Image (cartoon, rainbow, N blue to C red; front, side, top):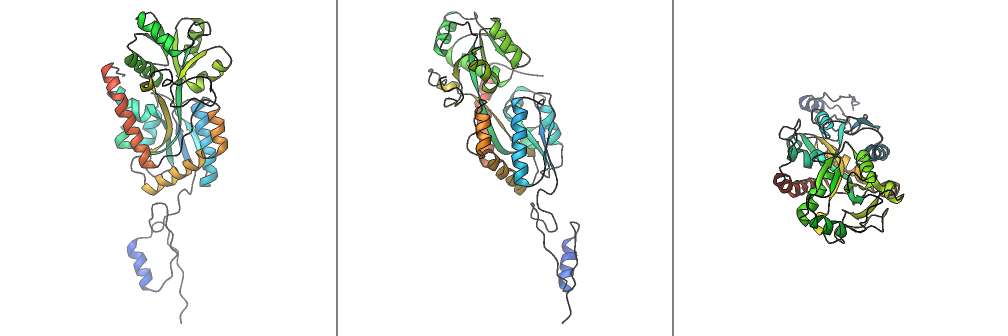
Length: 341
């Protein structure tokens, strides 16, 4: 018997060379990668870039960095956060949409990225349906409807009754036209028949200051942003827009408990890839994200900050969820004729 020679073929090995080698009696090592192709290495075999389309230091950035650390442990490769803010997440989304669809460039997306921006911008620099692939939902954030510390209102219904009797009397703050915080109050107005005056600000901090100073009378803020001010007595929470009460604000009723079940509003955080990424690579990242959000320390950390960490979704469930969210917001945005340039 002749001893068989062992020859190694790298990723460039073609099908023809493979079968010629077999015919010659050469034993070949078989390596199947994440895409299932012969000669490919298992995914991931190098660091992954996680593009966060927000500035460093905020709750979105903190959420992304904690997720990246837990996924690093699971994937056994670094997950490196890169902040790319601007354009209401459009700059980061464009960067990922233009990247190689190999799973090594991932977008930390929000509801603005895949739900609101396509409805608000006639000319968007990316197409989420054709250029991005939903992978995993990570967390959701409800809003908390707040008034200033000297306000006479103790319940959302009290404010609505007074506002309905005095159309145009009350100002409400938002973090900008078309933001989820703006749309939450537009939805409240549509459901209750009240008429408020919109005063947009460049971020939550100036809006909170205006509310505390009495320049505006109402604000639907991200729960994580107003949490400390509510707990410290500098703002008063009338209701939360989640389906259930928040563990961090157990005494604050939901909008449904306040009599307005159709004003349930949350926005989400999740992972997206370039559209043509391999299905098994997307599935591997979905599984890794699911393991990360199942970590008790992850849930405890972010639920204490006003976020909700729901059960993990499959990739298909996440796709359907995004579609339903867009269907929900499209009629309101059209009816209010909200268009951004």
